[in-house]
Image (cartoon, rainbow, N blue to C red; front, side, top):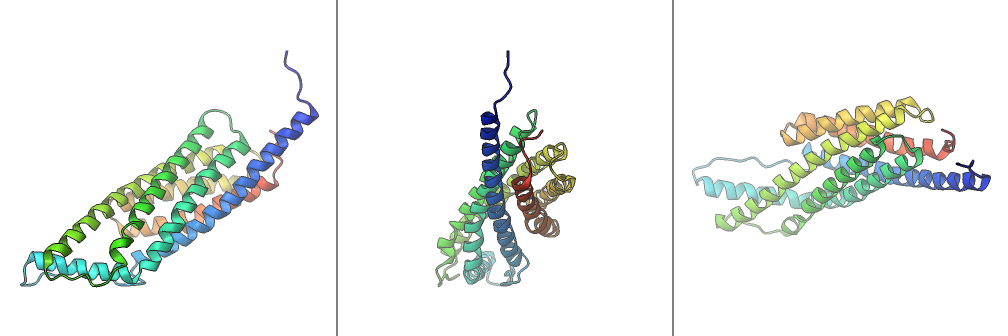
Length: 261
């Protein structure tokens, strides 16, 4: 025969839920601010605001020399914005790991019925790890770009360096695109959790659902190299909706009575 929970047990439960709410609040702020900073810095780079992207030119010197000259110009460009790359790809992993912790804290505080809560945490954790790994791999390229003096004469070494950087860049592109699609599944699960919970304002659930759509747009835009889709999706997901949901839900949980069903 099951007994009714004691007042002490209810108090312990309330303390645990309050602890998870505080974790969600702190992690939400870390993730939200980090997402805004990383996204802004990346969009400044992608839109060529900080430095123009070099063009591939065809000259009479031959394709090998032309390719080496492009890589020399590209390395000089990356050297000039190295501060942007270092800051954003250092802040990014911190923000996404905080996002995974935030998702765990939110689900632990709300205690949704069924598998949706566990799956939400799973997708947020996997997506955050994929993005953090992508950022750190790309950050490792700074060892190429921090040095000056690369030369296209002779073209062989410059082409070898450039091909190595291209291979790393391509791998991080697909890792990042995959992370956005996995995170979209997490955001959709979060929208289901919050929309079914009467203690959470419905606009937060709706915002999470729109965030999921923006992440899908972002992932496919990156994978298909559609700059407009990628930049629009990035602005909505990383500057507006993502921080809004992370910080807003953290504050709602901190003020809600989570011991009531």
